[in-house]
Length: 416
Image 1 (tube, rainbow, N blue to C red):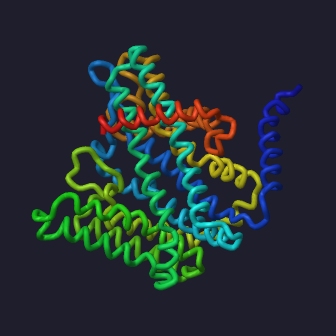
Image 2 (cartoon, rainbow, N blue to C red):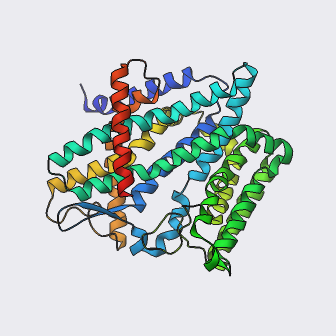
Image 3 (cartoon, rainbow, N blue to C red):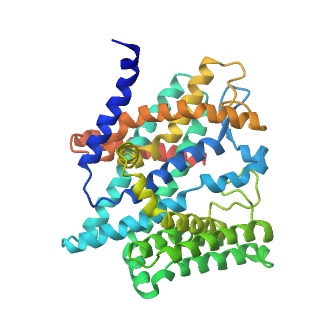
């Protein structure tokens, strides 16, 4: 067999697989929406990979730090990596279409919501159950306690997203009621609430405002883009609205950062006095508006691009495993970093274990990204079956998984 044929075999296999995926896709499938969802999920993975660094302590444990703490000039890069607003936009769009379709079929709201929440919960339960079993075993094998605590924090912190997303999804009927009353301005009340809370906590009288007030922004802050998605699905936002969102959101981002003193980073930086992401500040909504405007405006073009079977197959694979990817991407980071440290215990490896205080770290980190994605792909290949119904899992095994997940949650709660 010639070398050319050996080299062509993987490509030919992929093309055949892509054609099967393309042929099996229903004609009415909105490929652009799936493409945006895949982009948002991959943005979370790459974003966490690039804004989270691990260094080695004196006892050999891994602890987390942020390159933005050492390289603050890179903060604007977080604007392109923070794509949760885009995810909530697509979530609002998809939930609206799904609920409307369920109502036409006579399905109750409770049944509809239960199905969607189960799709969120199953991958989280599987991941936390495995960690609930793995961490004690790793401790017995001599893995430093600091590394185990770092793992618990890094893996569990993003799960706040699942809880908020579940709550926003449960409120979809309320979002639809707002859309019916306010039309394209359905997201405006959320924006006004966040602006008012920011004025209280950052304004002239901020010293008299208790810290918990900022938590009021959690629901409207992340529900803003979801409401945009609801209005979009209902035909309330077209090309002109997309331009207004994109331009207005971008202008507001610049105003808040350059004129009103908002931190430029869209993610938390250790030791920073103010954080935009938790609870979300007005800057998060401004960025979400800009991203949403671009997404709505480019939807048709994206849909045409995804008519190509190869591109569509890649997007379909990400969408089929979206929650599994989300739940395991931080585990993949820790496994890769821990395994590499075991192989190179003296000083670690650049881009994985060094202090992120120069641009060389960024270059090395990007170089490690393909291997990180490969490790993540291995986890996804094994864990993806738990994203669907657990029909083949016996009840005792399910009860054990729940107990292990609860154990991990209890441990994580003591470390955060």
